[in-house]
Amino acid sequence: MTQASHPASTSGPLTGVRVLDLTAVVMGPTATQLLAGMGADVIKVESPEGDTMRHVGPMKSAGMGHIFMHANYGKRSVALDLKKPQAREALLKLAATSDVLVSNTRPAALARLGLDDASVRAVNPRIIYVNCCGFGQSGPYASRPAYDDLIQGAAGIPWLMQAHGAPQPLYAPVTLADRVTGLHVVYAISAALFARERTGLGQTVEVPMFEAVTQFVMGDHMAGFSYEPAIGKAGYARLLSEHRRPYQTADGYLCVLIYNDKHWRNFFVAVGQEALLQDPRFSTHTNRAANINEVYSFVAQIMLTRSSAQWRELFDAADIPNTPMNSIEDLLQDEHLNAVGFFQSIEHPTEGSMTMTRAPVSFGGQASGELRPAPALGEHSRELLVEAGYSEAQVEEMARQGATLLSRQ
Image 1 (cartoon, one colour):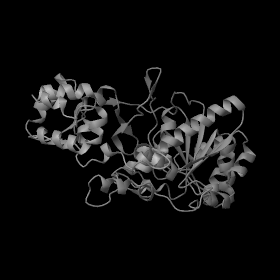
Image 2 (image 1 turned 90 degrees about the vertical axis):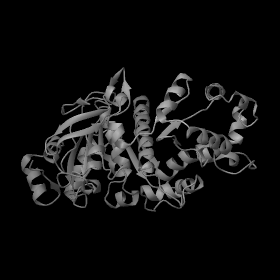
Image 3 (image 1 turned 180 degrees about the vertical axis):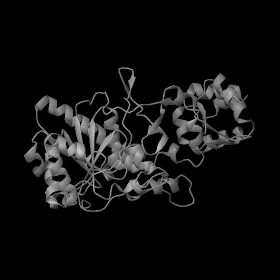
Image 4 (image 1 turned 135 degrees about the horizontal axis):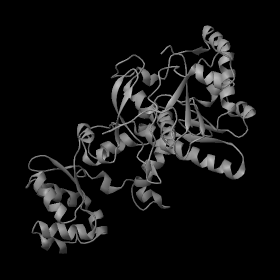
């Protein structure tokens, strides 16, 4: 685990890009944190109550929940009560010098605040205005609320979990919809910035969760419905096989994928079952896919006959892909992740020593730069409002009227 320091800014391909971040919870903050990791100056705009995720533990200090800290390090925080005219004016001043404004507030609510794309573009025609919404705004679901659980359900993930063998429909135990959509937000912003470099024009970008996650699901599971008329039912059989899971061994579990023809030849030779190479169920990739339940069931039974260590030695020698089944604690000790510096030990000014992850990408062989710690609510309100042209006295008056909140740290 590497030790990171915390400069006020970082380097990266988005250095010099300013992002006005009006997002909250997980999807939007995850996206903008990745932008910060690539060098963008991300200004997190929060209500005086703060992002909801500030208040979800575990935490050492009030308002500094662990998920919030992971999704918001590298950013500066300004607290603005956007229902107050002074705060709206301040936001527009910040927007005037920003390259991107990104929000996951429903468009109708932003319009009521006078912060729709036309209003923001009036002060900055070059801005990239990004609406992270639950559903595409031209469809009948446009005004529906959207949270990770709801979008997972709408996109069929609990149905797939039950089809795979779960006793009842289950959500994936990660904020899958939020994080998948967040990646769409990152590339959409990057593409819009590139287009602006070519054309000089800003634009409005819409990133809907339902469509993003449905694309993610249907890429695998459209199956026979891909054709007109359909030539079979929906669902990728290999992924839905009840036997597609970590294999139980004599003393634990092991993740194994015997996939191509070479893998299967090596496997049958290694376990002394060469005759099965002539079995039509195993003879070709197409046949194995058509008989996937039998194929996986066969492997599951034979895996019980040796320990995980014995299987790993055999599979490594036979060049068959395998890996241990890690727990979260195992990941923290993983030799590869620690060798590449994926986990960084930082010293937060109020929370003490913390373990954080870095962005998994690198540019020119260089990993993402070192980032400032996750901010306290309103930690940079004074700094950012002064940057926007307000005097110290004006900032204090805004705080007195409740338009902003000034951190006293």
